Length: 269
Image (cartoon, rainbow, N blue to C red):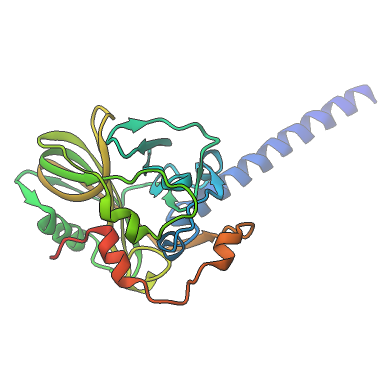
């Protein structure tokens, strides 16, 4: 009987391990090729800046992405499972997992296409290259560019205090940074036009220097040489801040396209 019980216990443990491993594997498969988003871009434009998800929880949904922080305290880059915070002084910080975010888009990055760049490209030419690499403009595309740059211009935003102003008002006095010649990484997304109001249609990119000391929301660049990688994503999952009174009261009916264009500092192509 004792021998039977031992064998049964061992068998149960092995079966349980297989089941758990299978569940983890299935979860990872489901998460790949999927963007997980916290809140909406229009709620951020409307001034809903209080964080609704911790960074620790956010990292369960991806190892790559962009966003911002509680009270709009800087620009977020999630790269290789590490969250970087570029504050209004242009410097990079490592926030604790307890820090929260009011808006972010993350994924588990796995490059579907990769191309080496051996000649200088400005921002419009780089976008054209990505469009050729990923011609389907109706699905999401995560973008990672590692290389040497002869020019990079970024910005960040200072932490806000209540009553919060709309984002278009905040960015009127945003600090901008000319990083000059620098090595680093650009990360972000190219999103379809139909995500208007939910996220940023077109290109939305952030930058961090190779020494992880400088960065921000990307406004312009010139890539001298590097590697461009694209991960095409065909699934989308949204987590809304249902406990937030400000989110519940925000006017999300109005068209905020002009505000978004001003905030993003879009470069004409």
